[in-house]
Image (tube, rainbow, N blue to C red):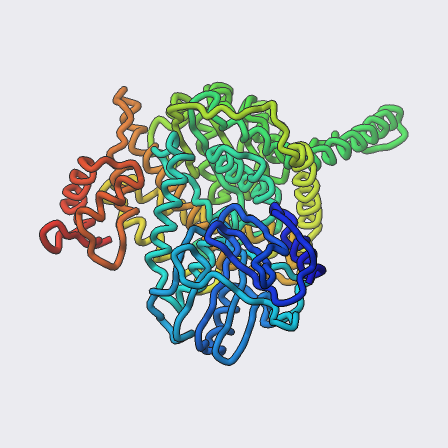
Length: 636
């Protein structure tokens, strides 16, 4: 038994061990205490082994008179292998031992069953009646389904994920609601300075391809993490040639537009970091150009000496990143040298606007055309021949302050604004991070090197393809996306007016492009990118896209509503934005009372007084109907 105790110690070596005593001589009992402590005892209640866990995470569930066919379904929902060893099975009883991260004290003994998985269920929580699990009988025989080994420690699962898994069998809706409320309270402490515009939901980060997750994880402030994710997606959209899709039956490439606006020194500078992701590709272009230039000079000398008859053409430097602080002609020449593709990345919007002040209309026209890959011809007096790009493909990431933002977008009427994803925020207080600590994680340079290496390999292999790969949504995904955008149109029209339609419609195009980038990178990581001429999104990707679009749409609508106000020197108008934020938080498919609305409002930092105003306003705009005294229901 001592060997078993030592083995379990190794399995739990990340936790603190209280004590290991002499090898006992008789029965042993595993005890999961209310303090989150797993102990193995002898018959004299002396510790053989005890392990303390921080979050009450060692849990035991005992099913009385279980239905083993439903237990198998539960295994599937939890993600357990059929021969999972940390369980004890008998005819009348089944015990399951798990490690549930961040689990609060909970009990299932009084819960109602949605499916007859057992006659009763007991748990190891403080409020429960079941706290002791015997894993060794009187003769020392191990009762677990399999003898513990280092290869199979107790299964680990997040508390919220655990509740979602068992809710098909047991009514745990109240526990889920309590956990969500707890999560809101925890998050509100972390993001209280950022509450005026929504964050990208945390669930997005757990579903991302490894490339984007690892890159974004280097940033701890939540706003910086969001900006890093969006910027890296847009940068990657510029380097996946030969990946195409369809939008209204027309061919599209993945290139996206993004603007990030925030006060100075608020974290938007992480945009500049993403330029390093394409560093290896740019380096290879420069090295290739140097060789071509050397050969050109040799051939030119031969031509001048009469050794060859035809004058050589000077080489053109190919790049990914297009210049943003130069003339429009220089930018267009570079775009032509790049076969119509490129990335415009600028952390100070005003330097971009000022550089092109004299020719801003040309910049605007090109950027509007490039969204739909419409051909563009540029001819000037003195040109040897006109410059022409048949299918311009431009990705763009711009950052700046509110003042710079409004100098870029003076109106919503020309259609440039609606072509961008917008991410905006204000910081009421700076949360100063300690730069002098060492968290023992990888250097940021290491992450950049890994990211740049993957980006180069992806770009190189895609560039060599003879045929294009077409990205597609499944029919079910297409229908879900369509319903999502249709619902958005109905929700925002009355609040923001007709101008909001163009934002939502163009974000439909952005949604497919986001799907193209995420799916391409994931398929490349998994080694399946080149296995077929079509590239199909998975459901996780679709959910990520919906969450990102939902977030950026709210940011876009807020800034759209204030472009006109800014031109008339009016203060920022937050009412429509806050009303929409409150409306989106209200429950669908059921009635709710005023007290429920107040609770929801407070959870997103909307005062009780404002809740009353918003309810009246939403009833007037036909977003809500009043079904009774103090009772409402959503219509949109």
